[in-house]
Length: 609
Ligand code: AGP
Image (tube, rainbow, N blue to C red; front, top):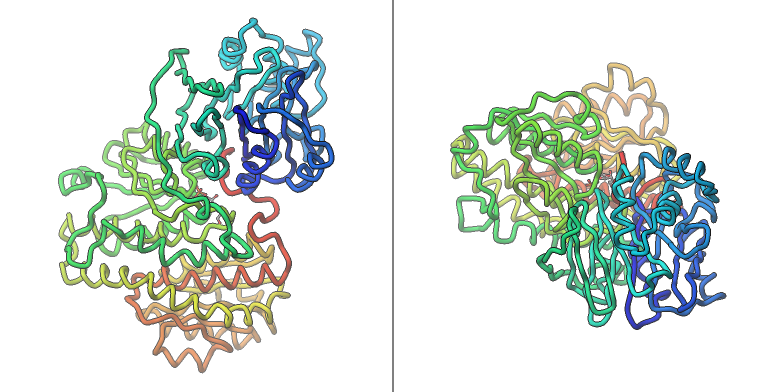
């Protein structure tokens, strides 16, 4: 869960590396470093703390050179410290490595090298790679790297430079993401596109076990067998602005406000006003294929899992097929009953989450058909799935996922409608009702965002609370889960989402004078039930804030405050409710002064188990 970047060209590498790391800091930010070849030796500068610490130090002690690698860290082996920061090198400092991932057999290799007289400065697995390269050096750095790879177990994206062959920058990937940016007289490696977008839009996505040799004017990619291969270059259609803050105080607020466009883009060319069908790109999931499927699983982590719960609701309601929604870290070890008659839908914004990837591979091994819903083209999940339905949300930089969630919801609804139409479990009238309701959501979310200052006022009165309960029934319960996660992960307030009807079986004991309750009451068929649950907690002194559909006046008599969403079909309210809960979490976090875009203990894409 780190970010790596590399540069070889004619420009000064240090600024390019630090600028690239700025775009990768959402991947990990407990220490950072760069290594630049200054024509004689490789100068390493690395420090514990945010990238700004490194930036200051490099300003004080600039380094010249047009070849370099950089790293921003999310500690896995060895606590955050200067010595454990990357880059790591061999004893003589002429082979230097940056790494994203985990070398699982590093202790074994370390002991072997210690027997050979090697000593180690840090507690990291990465330093072992640098020393192993030194130990195995054959006089040819590429050959040496290939040899070392046969000894490494685990996941890695590596950037390697050496004074022994200073005209090369080596990149290697296995399970951790790595892209190659192709420029004019310069080339790049990076963990993610935003790091190099300023310099080029032409990228190669490295597959597992591929190795790239970058020279100023040449890019050579070798496959696992060491054979040079030709790869399709991909032109990125994201603007730099897309990957920058665009004047917003935080990426999270920018991405919340980008939801109307992201929703529209994700429905474009798939859900058309005048068409009684869903155009699911090139995904062949017709009646014949569906009749061969008797089980559907939705597997994901965190926010993506919450989108999966709404997907379960929609597929079961519209297509009447039972769906199991599973957290990937449980699914992969529970020996799931999956076979060639199973459709496994994996959901992942980054497309790189280790647990979700492992679940995908397990299901694939068992013969299941894999459909991925992801936001990153070329991500590992997208390349290993049989079919991919992309959320067109654009780059999501803030750790707390917002626009990726709402666009995942849209993909879930489109999938449920498509399956239901194919199986004939819904009428065209019903299809049109849901289609038109979904097409209304961008404008409705825009409407809701206009009231963000009312939500800010609410947050400014409640940011000091230390516990919050989110209540809902049915679909609202699933939305409450996502609202609770958003609040927890950026404000550090303990909060729980609870099925409102379940509260009286124990947890209501926690409700006392002033307990903040956020109650979602948007489902007509459950409205009365939810109102009585609100009365139950009110009776214990709770401060109740309700979210309801316009026209539902009754709720005003029970709740202390009400946020209304524009009237919409009950089945799709998660899309229009969640921006309110995202903004509540955002403004409470801002009021508490937490690091909204890079919350403590978190990272945007969890690439280790
Ligand atoms: C959500 O705000 C978090 N960043 C986290 O729960 C995230 O949803 C989870 O790690 C899954 O990430 P993915 O969608 O990239 O697989």
